[in-house]
Amino acid sequence: MNNDVPEDVKSARLQEIIDLQKQLSEESKQRYIGQTVEVLAESVSKKSQEKLSGRTSQNMVTVFPAKRYAPRDYVRVRITGCTPATLLGEAES
Image (cartoon, rainbow, N blue to C red; front, side, top):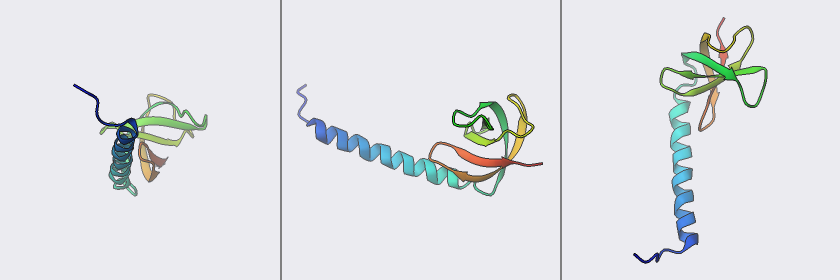
């Protein structure tokens, strides 16, 4: 088959799909703001040594302050914000 779609059109179409996916992902994550979820802490966050990163039972990445927790701990986290890819929260006492 001939490739009759110009590269700039392909790039524009791909960017539209990426932008839509980011929007839908963030909307999905926003529904969790204000809720408390159980998170299995997996590791220190990539961006801060003072935070842990883990996953909920729905496999959503969640970042929260490490405080007295360590990887392999189950932590109840109150979700306070999000990005398109990550839930952000505070560990409950």
